[in-house]
Image (cartoon, rainbow, N blue to C red; front, side):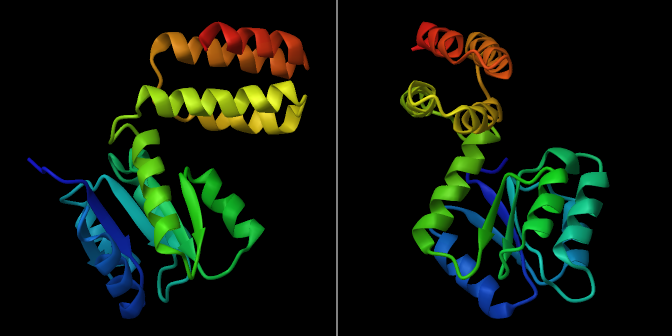
Length: 196
C-alpha cells in the first residue's frame, strides 16, 4: 500500500520531466515516462493518483494518449492535468470533453503547479477537502450571486459540483444551480445562505 500520492508525469522532453520530478519529489512519488505508449504500458499494472500529461508529444500526442487512458478499465476516473506549450482553445475543449481536471500552459510557475495539483487531488477525493476550504468556495459563489453575475455564479457552481461533497452540501448546491438555471438570483442566494 502506498503512503504517498503517486503522480505519473508524461512528457517527451527529458528537460521537462526532470523539472517536474525535481519540483514534486519532496511531496509526491513521481513516475516519469517519456511517451504516451509508455504511460499506457505503466497503466496496465498501476493506477496513479494523478496524471500530468503533455499534449504535444511525437508519435502519440497527449489527446490520443488520454483517449486510450479513458478507454482502459479504471482509466476513466484517474484525474488528469494537461500540460501544453500552446494556449489553444480547441485543444482545451477537446481535453475537457475527455474529462481533464485542469490545463496548465508551459512554462509553468512552481507555485501554480503545486496549487493546481493539490486542488485536483482534493477535487478527486484523493486528499481530503477541509471544511474551511469548502466554505471559502461557497463564499466565492456567494460573492458572484450578490454581484448578480449569473455567468460567474454558474461557473462556480459547476466547479463546486466537481468536488466530492457530502450529500447535504451536494443537494443544496444542486438546488442553487436549479434556481440559477431559472435565473432566480435571489432564490439561489437564499438557497446558498441555508448552507453557510
